[in-house]
Length: 187
Length: 54
Image 1 (cartoon, rainbow over the protein chains, first blue to last red):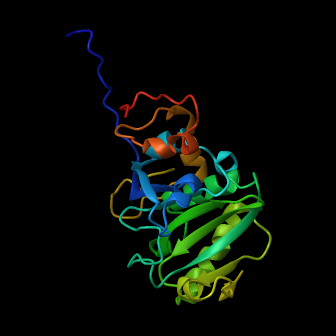
Image 2 (cartoon, each protein chain N blue to C red):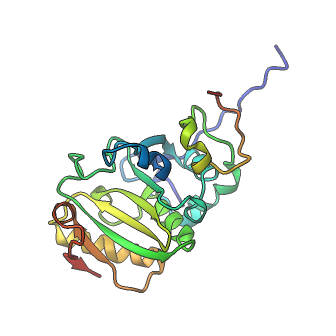
């Protein structure tokens, strides 16, 4: 029928990788015994436009409930230590006061999806952990032992965020053994 | 600025380029579904809840 709405032909801007958002809510967390069993994929985006469609409709970290974890990982990589791609990896972490990580989170996402990191293949994804006193953003990478790549990524990330404090890199294998694992690298 | 155009190199987009699209992509993407027990914690209230109901 003539009145049927037609979608205008329009090509979206493709991303180098597809990215999956995952959410872990505190309410679900307490109901389940096994850690990680509540992390659920929310949506996968593969274009600039779809990224914004999700981003604009989900809360920024400052509006998420305390205890929430919100992840954005390359499609097919699960945000877990056990994931085969993450197993030998590690993470850089930046800390913000509660309610202060929104811009840092957005700039981290844009740097990832826009392939702004020099060793982009090293990136697994990012997570923001919302807690009562602080919001932490971690950038997960694949090959923790590759110091040169991790240092490049850490330095670039600080520049993107205009973050001036020192940040540390923790190996997942250390974190599995010790809750307060030591930084292997610092930039 | 933006896509490489030749399909051979990485699709790099600067932050400023990506930000240009922010205001025009406000509707939930097609096929967007969130389990009902977490949608209140995750979604901005008043979003276009035209998705399937549960």
